[in-house]
Length: 225
Ligand code: DX5
Ligand code: ZN
Image (cartoon, rainbow, N blue to C red; front, side):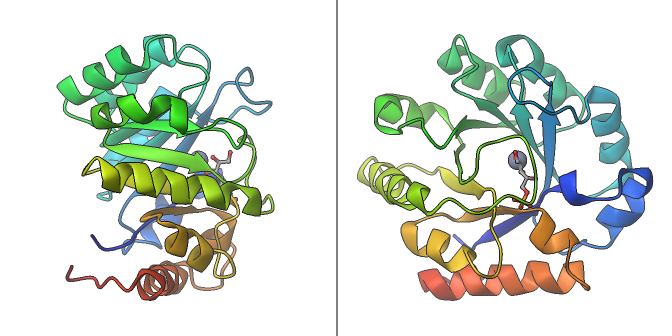
């Protein structure tokens, strides 16, 4: 599968959100970070903004829920128009039930791991998911430094996915840039979130293409694959 780029709107000018996302029509997804000031020490946006964004942009929405009690709140984000909804396993009470519910609603189901959360305990759950998100910073803020200590976990996750023959996207989020994306791709990631690297660039669309090209060259994959 070709590498996919999901720019995080956390680095946008929120007063001009529609204009900002119109600058990156070549993105594969739009990554939307929902924070509740409980699971992480920051507060961003919720359902009304997601609904408006859905109406304003054609690119599918990749929701990253950094919230407590995703079992209760995540399904509403599918109703709001998300194509993919990722919850944190550290916050979920019943991750299998939640993943099945999200899929039943017609969305892709994703599960996220904080940097200190190991992947091995969740090996048997992976078949319930469409995406595994390995955080490469502590969730909560954009513009943080990439944590190289997460690379071995990306490699181990890729081995588990391949061993079980799963059709599961492996996403990385946090500090992903032209300097770090190749390391992630070589470790086995195929879906890349980038916030400050994209929206901090002079030409955000050119940066999306550049990142995708770097990732694809690093894995030896092509856009046609
Ligand atoms: C952090 C968010 C990220 C963030 C990434 O908690 O989940 O999606 O926006 O921003 P950068 O790419 O700047 O690290
Ligand atoms: Zn995110």
